[in-house]
Length: 271
Image (cartoon, rainbow, N blue to C red; front, side):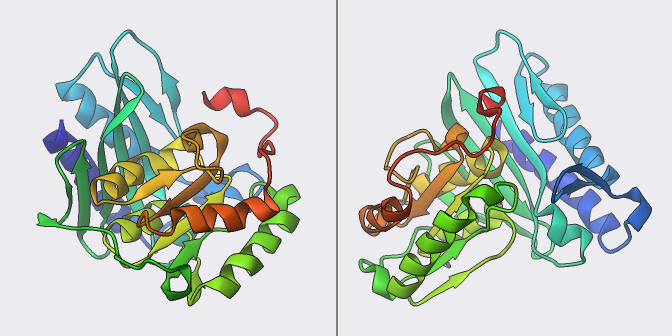
């Protein structure tokens, strides 16, 4: 399954590189406000699904563009063919392919491929995490005051911007810096390899975070929602770190988000 996931990610990555900087404005469509796609997203996703189905025809899928396919298989692939679409369409070289596998609701495999840098991150449950075949691990920072963090703005949930900005100020003042890459899969991969010490964002979907979750956990880190619960895959509140600052970060975020607030009006559609 890992071999097929890597093959699918690299095939999709090749499509992304072939069209990078060449997508005409007329080929860009808006799914919802501030959320865009093009034929590149669709072609890459189709390639991933066809590659996996050629070997595992009975498996289920949850993909960003084509949605959910249901069957009786215990395996479900969670796919983002192009994480960082706005970066991609704007000519900013920060984007990635993200593929994860669930077995009976447990995340067991994750692949994130950055075709610009030819960086392939992969991990499977109990097998460790790797970057281009070299084992990786999270950072060893123990104090938030020593940490470089990543985040993302809630551009699809602007009604939560006030508490987000409060949280941003609180966390920013307690860390050495904050970065906003515009591609959650890249952020999570960078936490797994120690480039970032932590990442937090609200408004993300399962395909944004599933693969990165496997990577970070297998690299020795922690993933949860803002309240240290395990509902991040579907409640859209993501907190990931090297594990050593997870509690401290959660405490700071809870000052602005003491309880769960729905991010989208149709939350149930993502379960």
